[in-house]
Length: 293
Ligand SMILES: O=C(O)CCC(=O)C(=O)O
Ligand SMILES: [Fe+2]
Image (tube, rainbow, N blue to C red; front, side, top):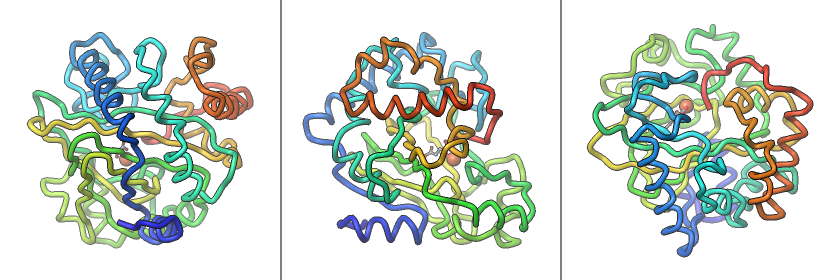
């Protein structure tokens, strides 16, 4: 775990991920815990339709399946939990993102979801990169990896201990080896994620965040017995333009255009939202699907 911003950025660039502690203040922690408990129960009882359901790795999700591994759109005003937007725009978090992306004032609001344990089925995601298909040829993979720019970032911040995520450090820069391809081409999740050459398990203590490059090879395994409430979000840099649009607008963010949402944000949040809405207006909803987000 790197403690100073320069080392954090270097680690993020070299390994494709970095763990950073302390981005939730002691005051915010119980607020986020309580807000998460509320949206998790709404999701599990079926009254929140925006969720990631067991059996499906990528959108669109199966709305009829009740068991869920994620809650989508936690800042949505219909959920009535302002703690999420307050934290998403908090100074410690913004500073960490700006440092890792190497930008100042151009952050745009994007996705904010919650990753949770399913209750009645264990479930796992297969090895993947978020924006490059598992069937990409080596040349296609190299082209896409080489074209990556620091236009956006995603992270997981654990409220409870979380050991669900596995990554291959450094894989965000290089095409898969023939053996790594064998472990990531098919539709199935691995029996043991650590069979993937180079894989490590990412374990977070409560309050720790892992920031990761969406091109890193990663997978996740969800244990129905192990409580998970992990904040899962992305932020972009406006210089990304339509490159970011493809990743995020597919998730159905039109609710973010409503005054009710905007009115609940602080000045920084309003600025960040304004930058997203500019992208929205320039691109529209019809951006097609990328793999995940
Ligand atoms: O559950 C996780 O930590 C990873 C989720 C993931 O890979 C995704 O949403 O694409
Ligand atoms: Fe992913």
